[in-house]
Length: 454
Image 1 (tube, rainbow, N blue to C red):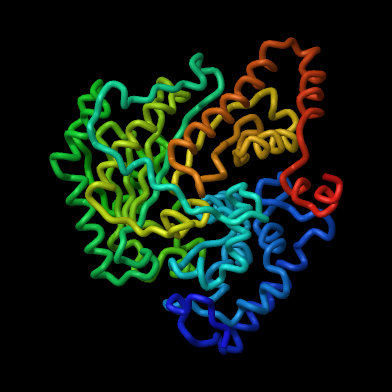
Image 2 (image 1 turned 180 degrees about the horizontal axis):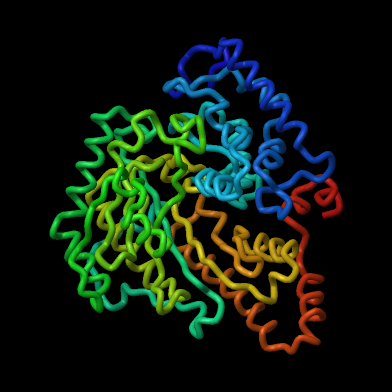
C-alpha cells in the first residue's frame, strides 16, 4: 500500500486503474524530458516554464513513491499537475489565463494533496515562494488581520511608489480565504455552494459592512455595493464584466468552450453557486466560490495608480471584518490553505502594471532584476509594459508581504527613473552597468556547483 504518514488524508487504497497509471507515466516522461540537463531552474528563473520547474522536483524516486496515492476525495497526482501537462489551445490569451489561475503549473483539487504528495509538493512550494528548498518550513505566523476593527487616522496607510504618475499604470491586491468545514468549491455539491454563497452575501450586504466601507473610504459617497451571480458576469455581452475588467478586478475565468476539461478546472456545477460582490465605486470585488471560497480584490485609484497604501488599508479592514465573522481553514506550517499553491500562507498577492521603457530594453536581464528582488515578472502584449507581483506569501505575514513588495517595486522604479533622466547616449552604458552588477539567478545559487564553491 502506498500510504502517507498521516493516513487520515488519503483514501487508504492504491490507484490501480491502468489508464490512469499510464497517463501518469506519460506525464512523468514529458516532465523528465523537459528537465534541463545541467543547472536546474527555479520558479523565479527567467527561463522557467511549468514543465521545467515541475521536472526539477518530480524525480523518479519521488514519482514512484507517490504515483499510486489517492486523497480521501479520490484525487490522484494527475489532478495536481494537469495544468502543466495538459495540451491547451494554441492561443496566447488562453495560455495566459491558465497560467494566471495556476501559476507554477499545479493546482490543489482538495486540501489533502499537500500531505498526500508532500515529498513532491513541499520542496516545490518552497521554490514557488522563494524559500530555500534545503530548509524546513517554519510554523506560519498568525494573520495580521486578526486585529481590532477599530478604525482611526493612524490605521490608514498612505504609500505612493510613483507620486508623479510616470510609470505605474494600475494595481490590484488580492487576498483569498476558505471557510472551515467546507471542501474547496471544485468538490462542492449544489447545497454546499448555496450555503457558502448565502453565508457570505449575508455578511457583505449587512449594514455593518456598508458602514465599514464608508469609514475606510470617507471621501467616497458609495453606499455598499451589489452582488452579481456568475451567470450575469459570464453572459455576453455583460456590463458588469466590462466594468470589472476596466478596473482590473475581473479574475481569470476560462471559457468552458475553450478548455474541454472544464470540470477539472471549475467543478461540475459551474457556474452555479458563484458570484461577485462589487462596491459601488468599482474598486472592490469579492468573488465567491471561484477556485477558493473568498477572493477579495482591491484596485488602485485611476487618478493615483501608484498609491498602493490605501488599497491595502481597504483590504486590511475587509479581511479583519471577515476574520471576525468567519473561521478559515488553517494549516500549522502552510497557513491559510488555498486551491492555488502560490496563495498559501498569508494568501495575498500584490500586482502592478508598470511601464518600463528603459529596463525593458533588455527583457531577460529585467526578469533577473525582478527575481533577485522577490518579484514575479510577467510580460504583457506591449514590450515596454509588464506585470510585477510578489512571489512569497508563505511563512510571512500580510504586512511583511506588503512592506517587502513596496521596497522591491520602489527599487525597480528608482532604476527606471534613473534611466529616464539620462540622455539616449548614456542609456546603453547605464543598462550594461546595472545588469553587470546583477547576482546569479536563484537556480544558480541553489545548484551543486555553486554550493561547492561557497
